[in-house]
Length: 236
Image 1 (cartoon, one colour):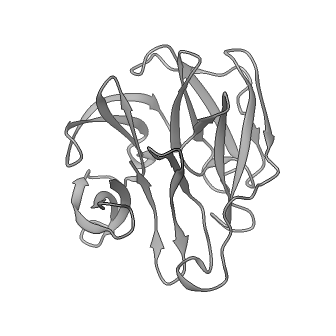
Image 2: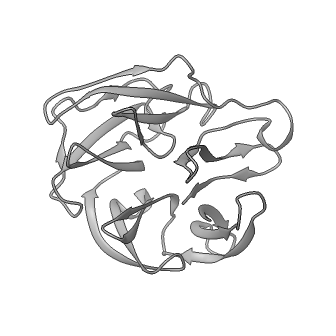
Image 3: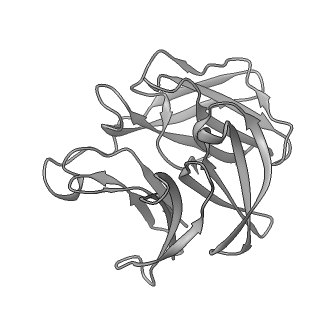
């Protein structure tokens, strides 16, 4: 089991993408930086397609949304293509209905605007959904907060609640309609699904969840928290 996460490089003052490994998911060993660019990287969204591994990290500092491919998973990555230009924070890609879909926050602080894009092919061209912005003027539900999952024939998206502060909790939405012309969602009754606990490693903030179904039908999730330290990652 591997997990990718952001660390701040004291030498460059930029975020890099690091790797940790675990045999059973209970204890983890730090490996090394696996992706380092001359600009800030975060939110390493790793996914598999046609037996190849890809990563879309947040790269708003570069002014574009960048796709990387593993040449030797999980340690070696190479740049493939720029999918979109401009500010696209915490890009979250998923496949549904034989199409690619991608959420990203597009306004910057106060993180209150969510846009949706779609494409027939991973490399594009990517098109803006006609209902964009999907969310406007609501920092509680706009910024993506983890991997989009498909459960019971519906996509579910997770969102960072950035009001009153960045990443205060994680909320979840069931997408009830998703086509090239229409979009509808509803917040699930269990939302918020993550909250700070008031003490320990997640005493202050929680803004990310990465959920996977394990081989025995159970679920496993990587989460982050801000207490004495902030830990942020995507498992795979």
